[in-house]
Length: 125
Image 1: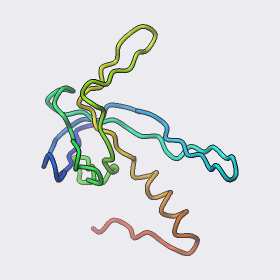
Image 2: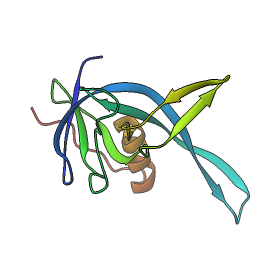
Image 3: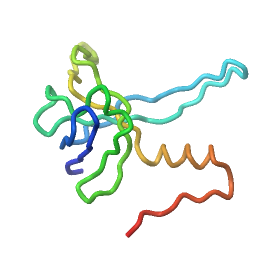
Image 4: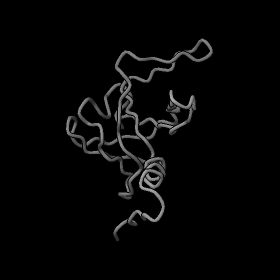
């Protein structure tokens, strides 16, 4: 997969690259005791290296596009500058990465929230 781009309120236009799967986001309904997986979130890093931020506070909600201008998802967070993950004794440094929800998860949620009979408009040509 090639590069990606987003325009955020805080950081403006940023060019980056996909960084793989980040985490599953779970929900818990205390009334029913049901635990559910909402979506699998993905990571993006700056094209100029992971220590330069792709997004920052204030960029949440910005759309992420691939270089063909197809929407990939929506920014909702970032990995804090001091955050690291430890895997089997090795350090995985994720500083500067942004977190986005893939568009497939967003459209699936919209369809379920809006109910049957509602159609999401196709991409304008």
